[in-house]
Image 1 (tube, rainbow, N blue to C red):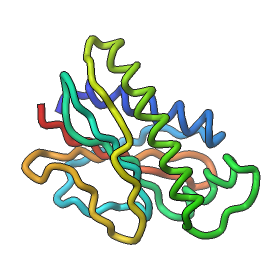
Image 2: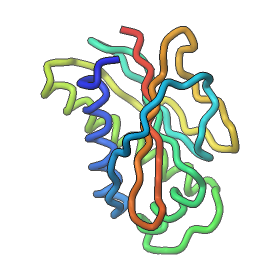
Image 3: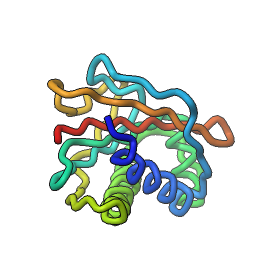
Length: 155
């Protein structure tokens, strides 16, 4: 998979989490091919991508990490995964999708990106195309916050 296609999504997610969630994160050296569609997080936002490139990108968070991020967004302590957290992940994912579209233009790619869904629960299934490879990248920040971006492009 071409890293230049994933990088606009990485840049967008990091910017969104820094701006909305007041959280600075960085990419780790942990990058791998997924063997299944099971999420490694407890909540995931899924972006649908159509255009010069097509596929899905997901942003998955462990429960403790997203609770810290959303607590910063709302300036109040969040303690459980609920509809408010699901809505916040939708906002993070939608903002990331919009920014990624702009970032893709910068590398000469035209693609429409939009929030496809937000999934919640342990070991939920992310709807990447099972006939194509999915790459996963781990990100970490302060306060033990982490998240994973998965990307599955079909063209």
